[in-house]
Length: 341
Image (cartoon, rainbow, N blue to C red; front, side, top):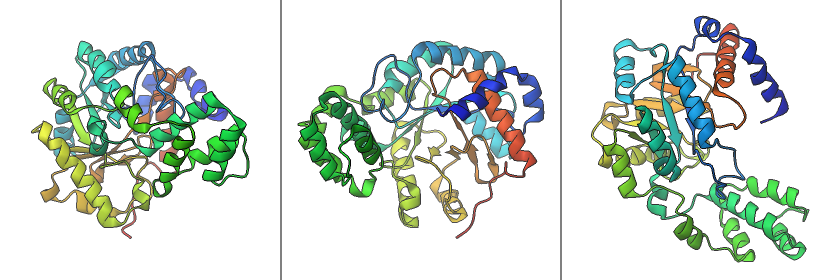
């Protein structure tokens, strides 16, 4: 986390939570994570941080003390009946469908009687293939481990960066997009690394039996696109297809309401897309974004906030989000209005 942002969140510890809740337009909180783990996870650790089990349990205790957990079905019903969000509630969501959901997160939540939504990408379930961003993380770890000038030179040539320094190569790899992801396989060949072996040994993603068990335990499964693309780079019809196909996939595991969370971020998506997705025939009951709890209830959209920064207690994080919403409201930026084009 950047120094200025850390200072902002740290400074909120002096503000009373109840005062912020009374003043803020945000009355319930929707934190999201990807994983919780006490281990180094090579396909994630070079992309973003995550909390360990002690930190997560501590955060959960705070949420249970200050807010009331709400089941996804009850949340959807409340929004349908009142066209607004309830007060003093919380709902946890987890993106991307990593195996830690089944092995770590679900047992902790189950022990506390807390429900959650797990948003998944069908392309990766059963470890059929590896998301290119996770390939980048694995490659960065292996490059750092080998750290040989001859290897760095060959990798720099593949990704077209003039520098053979690790820092420059890291930055260039992190900029690789889906359109040129084949370069990652070329880099893996240089490193004598097999992603197929990695998938078989590490088993990063959930499996079909695990999804069935999570659903039987009362957890919600939601769509998260088919293979986690940047929607902003997709044609309109492909945006719709990615959404509908992923939601149709999760319906095989459950017979209740349908939820969907946009991958990466949802900025610059058109109102036309929401109008299409919310048509009755698609039966998507609730959408989720990541614009720090801004208001978009007219599109059945709940905006969440990232809550997996180690070293930042959830009380400071929530206070920071509440203060942010107050400032956004004062500047008339709290409500999201999308363009139709």
